[in-house]
Amino acid sequence: MQNNEQLNERVKEIKQSFRLMMDGVASQSMREKGLDYHVNWGASIPMLRKKAAEIGKDYDLAIALWKENVRECKILATMIMPADKILPEVVDIWMEQTPSQEIAEMASFNLYQHLPFAAQKAYEWIAASDDIRQLCGFHVLARIFGRGQEPNERGINEFVDQALTALQGPSLAVRKAALASVMRFADLGLVYERLAKNATKRINLDVF
Image (cartoon, rainbow, N blue to C red; front, side, top):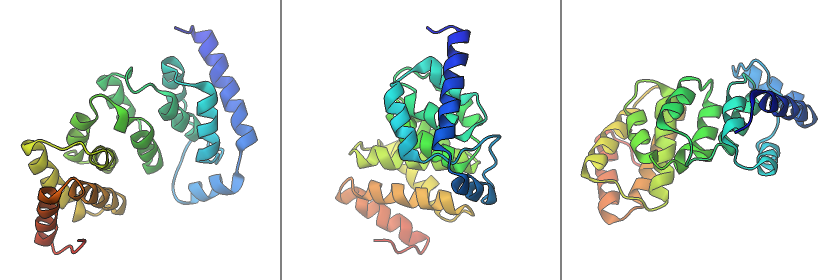
């Protein structure tokens, strides 16, 4: 356990290191797309992955970094948070505080798909009314299905219903994530492929 002073010092050092990764063009482009972080250095994901590898997994530091309203801090937090240590309640708090599609996707790929309770959360999220949760839910399910993890009967019905709703929804990002998860679902085997085909046909979507 690190004390607050040590943590604050480490966060400060990490924030200073972002200056060396600064990409003004990238951060300006993000601002123009409406990604409004308090601070955004425009650091690339490979640079942040390298930084995360140097740091290693660190629960306390991840919590401290997430609290910063800085794009790079939040992304780094998702990379260094140990998936087996974060509690469902903390995941809920992070989800509440997710400021953008980019952070939602980073959290899904770097952290949420590896949670011991990933599937349970994903089904909860795809049934939510907001885009950020749905986005995370479908991204996580795509990864889970991609690893060959099959849903139970209730999971199948829930997934198909929510995916069809999302595929007809207004958000392009959610539609793309839902479609990716449907494709991975279909890859689970012949029965799943038939279910996916029949379901998408019902909404006149020809993807198979």
